[in-house]
Image 1 (spheres, rainbow, N blue to C red):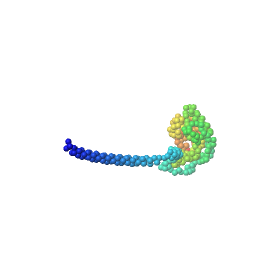
Image 2 (cartoon, rainbow, N blue to C red):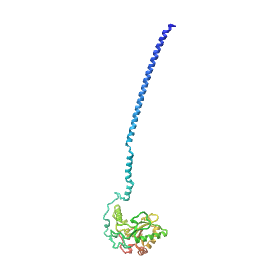
Image 3 (cartoon, rainbow, N blue to C red):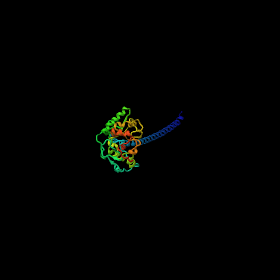
Image 4 (cartoon, rainbow, N blue to C red):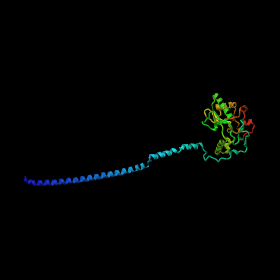
Length: 314
């Protein structure tokens, strides 16, 4: 038994040393692995921190660019104080001018272009003859202009709703008479001042030139509308206002047959343009008084022929 004691002890001691060495090595490796993991973990955290700081920086910059509530309120106030573009465009539409491509220089003074035009002696006369050859005085304004108590195609007050009192009374009776027979009429344009006609004519001249403009528009002073005795009318539906399509309507036929009874004539009858200077306008009524109106209608003549004057030059 003693023979084996020493070798066994020696073997046990040697084995213990190897086991301890193995444990120490494993412990060392384990510690190194842990440190490496910690280092990698720390590196990962650093990367996340860097990424987070980059993400936060722009957000802070955006936040710094945001307006404070007071600044936003002030900005909105400034916007509200500025007129909307549509309002400005609306003003432009009302005062619309021809484009440069079509606009021509206005030939002035348009009222003195034709030396053959003479000024009438009695502009206040009810059957006064006004045409392309006979003009009202430049500063003429009819007396006793009143607003018509008849419906128009537009709302609101305007000089276009006015006529001389005698003509206004007669027109109101004409509208009432038509309504009793189932015919509805609407006013389009009555009185027109010299200044208004001048502005209209100069506008047309700027678009089409003087010679062409005078074929469809009156030279200032030569418009019957300035007398306060003329009015353009249309049917109750408001269509064909001062347009050729009004001819042939029920309303046009009624006016041709009945206007004279109220003191009105169709001032520019069909086929008489070489005499009056204007094409057929069944919508243009002129008050001349019952006696003259009935005589003109019965003879199928124009006011120029009634006064035995020379035909108007186009």
